[in-house]
Image (tube, rainbow, N blue to C red):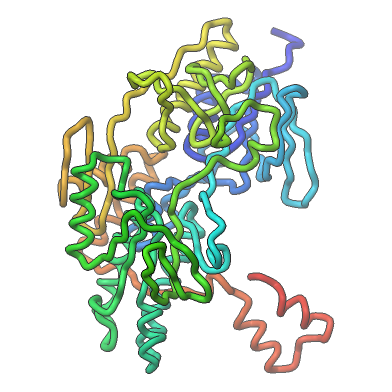
Length: 454
């Protein structure tokens, strides 16, 4: 209709849920019918199930991310950090790259900011641990682990060598188990290039507060996974927590102590903290409370999905059950939000979200995996193949599917690349040393260069 402004739809978050929602809506709505703005600090979506393989070198890191501007044509991609939401004023507060704050108005809002690592006030944790939720952390961890092998092969200090070759992972869910198993597989291959470092010299330790690992699958399959890891030499401490990690000295709740130079924290996630800066209804875990139609309780024009949303699980007999924080739910919730938004725009009635959990697949390194698909349990190579097939099918865009498949095919006749590129984390260090050695740095330049975090 002439003179009618297009509906402005704002999507907060460019992960699975946000990107899928925006993509589905753009396919169904013309530009003159609706404008779509997606707000995300990084201008790309990371396919997180491939992070472990990216860290281990099985796939090229660039192939597991999807640029939002590429996959969302005719959408406005705003690279900024959301700092608040006001449903009363229909606005989203965004801090953009130049540090300024913008107010973005909306007619319909989709909240999918995702989650962040759930941490605890453990002495030394913030100073010495790293998470495993984004591509930067995965690349850093790969380079860090390989560089520990280089350092261990060079030192004559046995205590330091033992510390360098000890790797601690805290959290026995999918993220922790997959990351640890893939990286151990990578270092086992890398050790063949060293004369003074063998796979048996490395110590891989998993700490889990619960009495089992991988709660996403059945207890039997979780126990099978634990047995596989122990057969490969992993140490697993169940019903145990991390007490402290001061200067690389680790203390566990059961009294175990050891030194390590690598602490990876994968002990759960928590909804994005931006939700606390909104006027939306939250549950006791900080998630947005949603109705079965994925609309925020009491708000017809605001939807939420993914890790940040508390969505009733209509497939469960338990009336209090909610959907788990998985990519499987996030993607399907996004598609339901898209159809419900279209229903609202066309005067229809939103439909409820209902999806029975199909199962889970996990890789434990090359040719090893576990899977539970519609109550069918797979182990070993069949599970590993199922893991790759499922996630390859779920990966957006055909050319990324092709690139990942090519990475896998090339790994069959050739060994994986096992080199640490430490310069990626401190790219200016060598240049700064050169300028200092040659006396070309000015006095006023000296302080900023020394203190800058590259």
